[in-house]
Image (tube, rainbow, N blue to C red; front, top):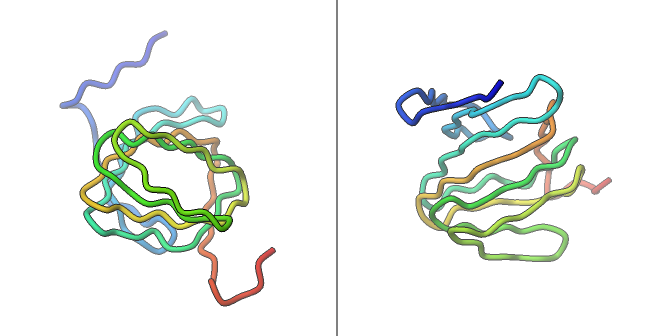
Length: 120
């Protein structure tokens, strides 16, 4: 059976993600390990160094952001996409108000990483 979510039916929650509070709207969770969410990041907002136990795919719906990890730094804008493998340490910073669509394997446990500690 199809699942529909109209704009006026969306429920936004303010939740903690790797030590930072952000606004998230869960669009769909299939109950078998896949979810889709919208996330709002205010301008100049950094999700500090962290990693996930499972993969995460991110599509920039509007705005722009910077992704840093594995010795790389990438600027991403509206329409850009990136994929993060399980365990990859990275930092995400919005450059202006940014809305992203996140598709991820569940459960998706995230861990902050101490930048001064030894990496796994």
